[in-house]
Amino acid sequence: MRRRAMVLCVKIHMNYFLAKTDPETYSIENLARDRRTVWDGVRNPQALRAIREMRSGDRVFIYHSMGDPCIVGLAKVASEPRPDPKDAKLTVVDFEFLRTLEPPTTLHEIKETGLFADWALVRQSRLSTMSALPAFVEWMRKRYGKSKI
Image (cartoon, rainbow, N blue to C red; front, side):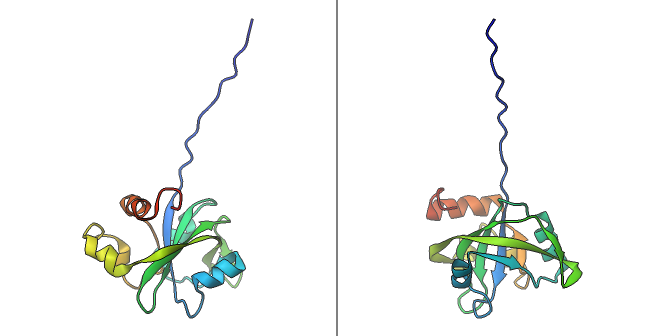
């Protein structure tokens, strides 16, 4: 009698987030050079909630918040969230550089679509870290290609 191995197919669900940074403090170029960094310094409760939801393998759009605000790159969550060793009330996570996005996607372009008016990026300009809407991820895939996002 021949036995057949059962193969269990599991769909791996990847979440997307957006993390803002002042390029004068820590830019996409810094992340590209360092390859990996601890994402810390976040104090807003809503932003901390987003960091606590991150899981290893999730993707993060890196957003430069100064000058002409824009999404400039993509990172991968490279650790599980953990308490900040400097302040246990805060949470940190590691990001690993994946790629820059050329050309950058400006906040003006995102707003101009009219598709994301309810998203925190558009509504709450001071929120530093947030989940990315599935519709936004699809929009970005159309801009850059599925293999890049």
